[in-house]
Length: 99
Image 1 (cartoon, one colour):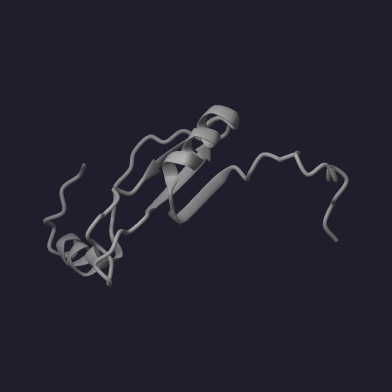
Image 2: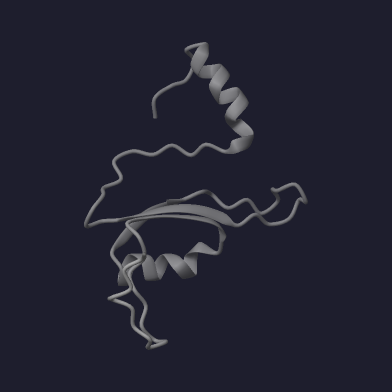
């Protein structure tokens, strides 16, 4: 059974999110402000594509945020799912460069 001892029935009460947040297809500028200022998170977002996606329309960003009290982002690499085939080929050929 879940422990609900800290639940609050006040609709204005918002508990801190988990220690790692993975967000997909969201408008991050609005959310980012709350995550960084209110809850002490840092994170990375994928670059927004304005003419991407299968329909050619705007594609919203994805982001990964971590609690600064628990984690530190020391390195990152953006990898689009469309790029996986060429990425894995470049690794097996030894042509992938460290970033």
